[in-house]
Length: 207
Image 1: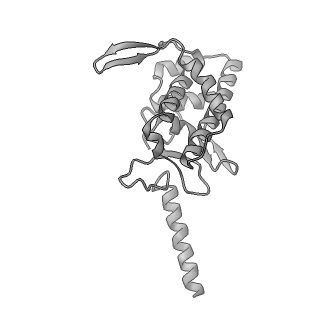
Image 2: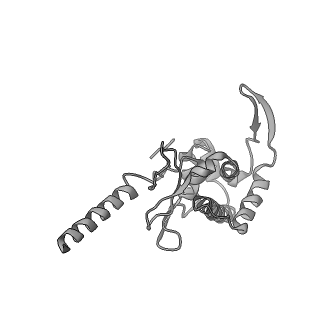
Image 3: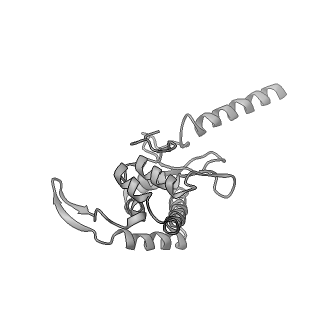
């Protein structure tokens, strides 16, 4: 687990990419038993702070928003998250993404790119974004741009979904042989080993 700054409950960052980590804020298996890790706007702000996309000062300002507005942002974040899961899960299975998921991302992308401009940098040229961008939903712009970048990058071929039947977490497989199966060797990987060991023992006892 990599946490940039503690604020509220600790979140796990195993995806290898910001947008994959965001998709992983719903635990369990999609379509079955799931655990919501972003039940409130405050949790969304805490996740964003720990992910390193906002500062502690920005987090305090974001938490001072009006109730109706923050509820709308939270609903928007959940919709974006499930669209990202749909897109990257399809890529992990080598399938064509669903059009509605792409439409959701494109709608967010149009908003996330507003005000962006190119500036000179030590490496040549880089994007710069307005520091006050998008108010209470500012964290979503970074997530959206991260997703758009990954979708067209060669690294998209390395996207995997955890092989556990009780987990839907996504990650970039940067292992040498690209055969990583589990989101975490100490989590789902360890549980799979335990299940496999128990199955072998049952088979041996029957034999």
